[in-house]
Amino acid sequence: MRCVQVDNEDHLYLAGPSTIPTHNSTLALDFCRAASIANNLTSVFFSLEMTRTEIMMRLLSAEAKVPLNHIRNGQMTEQDWDLSAKKMGQVSGAPMFIDDSPNMTMMEIRAKARRLKQRHDLKLIVIDYMQLMSSGKKVESRQLEVSEFSRQIKLLAKELELPIIALSQLNRGPEQRADKKPMMSDLRESGCLTADTRLMRADTNAEITLGQLMESGAKDIPVWSLDDRLKLVPRTLTHAFPSGTKPVFELTLTSGRRITATGNHKFLTYDGWMPLSELTPGSRLGAVRHVPPPLEVAPRDEDEIVLLAHMLGDGSFVKRQPIRYVSIDEANLASVGNAAAGRFGITPKRDEYAAARVTTLRLPAPYHLTHGKRNPIAAWLDEDGLFGLRSHEKFVPDWVFGLPKAQVGLFIKHIWATDGSIGYDEKNNLGRVYYASTSRRLVDDLARLLLRYNVFTRDQASPQGRLPRRLSPLRVRRREPAPLLRRDRRPRGARCEGGQPCRQVARRPRQHQPRHRAQGGLGARP
Image 1 (tube, rainbow, N blue to C red):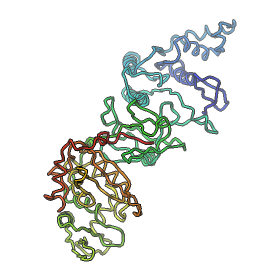
Image 2 (cartoon, rainbow, N blue to C red; image 1 turned 90 degrees about the vertical axis):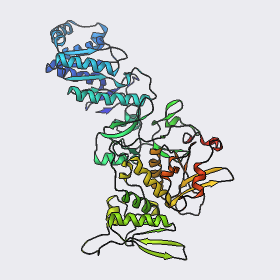
Image 3 (cartoon, one colour; image 1 turned 120 degrees about the vertical axis):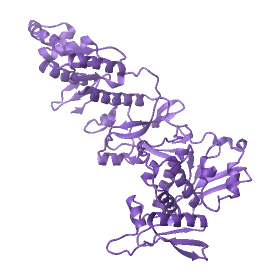
């Protein structure tokens, strides 16, 4: 099959090997003919485009081999009447039902299909076509509404144990290709994202890219999605499919977040869902403020969580070098030493560097590294793909996002004690909380973890141009003191163990909050 351009803007046509244009409704009607007339199986044709009379004309024309224009114009010959009379009884007696109710909803289709299944053993359903269906309620996005139709149709097919053929219109994408071959992405009211776009799984809260889904062929993946009240709820992603090469645009928000999509992909604005191509600099977009806990919460050993947080912050675990941790904070050094001893039985070796004013903890294996044995910390980090990474390549492993909220707070508490900062600007009477790293992915992962505590962040590049790699501080933007600063979740280390800056930030009066921060994260500059 391939698409051809026909001088009829109201209908879509398909062309077979003989290049004879065929109306897509006729193709679906042929399926019902084969099921009901040829094989005596019950089928139903829900038509939101054509009337019952038009469908009967097409059926009779196809069965009697009478030209359709003869029936429409009333110019039938004696031979046409004889052929029609012979097939009329067979067509009228076939177990085929036609419903041409206008503005039909999915609830009505489901109710009628269940009734036909119970009374007549329904075997096939055809819906012509999805874009003309209505949900019967107000929705923010037509794209989301059509997606919900697709999900409900799949569930109905599974419930009734029968095939459902749902027709859909295409956009103008095939006309721009040399072979005119349609793709799944050409469905009208749909948009496309690039293969490196990351989705958040609802079962583990870990992220997975569309490219990984396509390569693995994974299906029925639980992901977080927006409901009618704009709340995050778990939904099932059936599968990801390629749509070819298309022009894409990179959208950058003032919060530092970036996304790459095609021009017809829609984003939530104050005025509803709007395609990317219609956005202008200064448009305000919706952003996630809170991430619910995963459906499958998996707690881990706390020594493991503490050690991972510090190793991601100030640890070094590159290949062919000793695994070590560097800090000037005795509380942090003690936390790493206790966690390594408790989790892996390692006794740290301390090296003092007076010139650099730092202390290094080497974390050697508690046994001889012979006969293929590895350092237990190296093997542990390698399980998550971390061993051998340099500072700008570090990231938070997937299992951290599936931790209970208390252990997520424990992880944030210790990683913030490495490269985080909690200070107070007396001149501007403003507390400043941020985390700095040369790894963009680590910063993005930490921002997602903070969403478990309703903390929205802003990512920005370092103003120090002499740095060879990106420095991305995260600035907490909240009117009330962040949960991170509460006494039970304050970062470890001498800087915050009873230190004056932490207490001053937590006690900051609300009336001194800058007004321009009240809109945190909604500004967008494509």
